[in-house]
Image 1: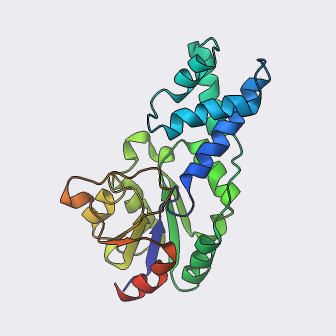
Image 2 (image 1 turned 180 degrees about the vertical axis):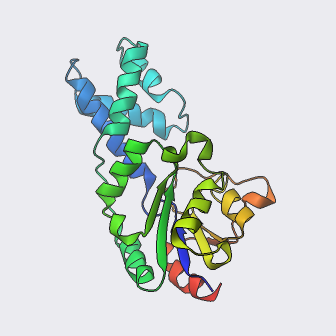
Amino acid sequence: MVRLVVFDMDDTLYDEIDYCRSGFMACGRWLSDSCDLSAETIYNAFWARFASGDRRHIFDAALKKLNINIDDDLIKQLVEVYRQHTPDISLPHESRLVLDNLSSNYTLALLTDGFLPAQQLKVKALGIESYFKCIIFTEQLGRQFWKPSVVGFERILAKTGFSAQQSVYIGDNAVKDFIGPNKLGFQTIQIIRPNGVHTDSGAEEISRPGHVLMSLKDLIELIEVI
């Protein structure tokens, strides 16, 4: 019987692409203060590179197209602006309904990878902290403990007092999200959001989720029967 429900955050509880848009706009506003281009023009260049599917060196490639001189310090500053900005994101209505329902019947926890200030700011912007008995930002444990490490999941079990067999993990990224909880014996569920950033599938059996849902609202019924 499931007692503990552990969530991923990005592209599970909200569309991560909204955070990307917010971050690029923040960078556009910041850079427009020191050049003769508008924030919108700069944002459009960042977004065009991101939307093209080639997400390597987005800032470098976009600035080159804009004829802005590039140096390491400028790129580092843009990365910091992106990671430290207050995100313009909100929790979808469906996600809030699911969290409201599940929090009445189960203990909830959150485990999220990513750079610490950015992840903490996302939690605050989404207004979700009160739903979770335990939040693990894996960056605080050390980058070597980002998923697919089992360490974050073990910390949640220790803090909540439940076993892996009483637990279910909900994530989106089939490359890394489910390896750790599968190894420990969690039930695992993949949420596939239409605008998901990560669409690759894991090659190994251990990386595959036990269940796949196309809508978060179906989670409530599934957890009751697994």
